[in-house]
Length: 258
Image (cartoon, rainbow, N blue to C red; front, top):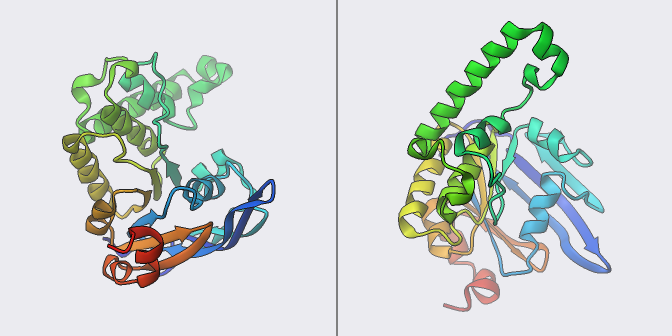
């Protein structure tokens, strides 16, 4: 863990989201320390994915606060939240199957002058310089993720674990300060899981904050320095892995009394 500053990377307070009378998120309150690796756990239906959708602007809360490094982001569109420094992956990786691995990464780079036809025509040197810079970032990202040997392969041919690495790479092209990973290890073989976790640790060592949802409790307790437990849409407990293991309410509600 890298201690960046005392302002939480993410803080939610009294967050509520209702669907047809069902409170998927019911007054959730917690914070994610800057520079931490924080695990978000809870039974199926606890509200974890809905919470991710609220933070990233996919959904708008009925009430409550969402602050990124102290700045209110409630009501912002997903691209605005991404521009504020949030990068998110999904349970099922979202990649372009018909594009190469390298092109998937290049496509994720933002604010490219060449996206405008007029700029491409009248600012050719700027566009060329930007394209070279993007190509360098793509190469660096492929190397970091150990995907360089697959640069020219179509994304559809990747394994599930490789697609998750590619999606992480697409997120990294946005240069986020907060990484929100939704079940990064789900369906991934142990070797690729370890590779992915190594990359996450390296990103955290660079100063990036990580918040991830995961059902593998042993993995969460091993990898995280802070844990948030949700249950029935609310925050059941927060603390260190040791504190969560010793919390009787968590054991009863989630860990099954074991």
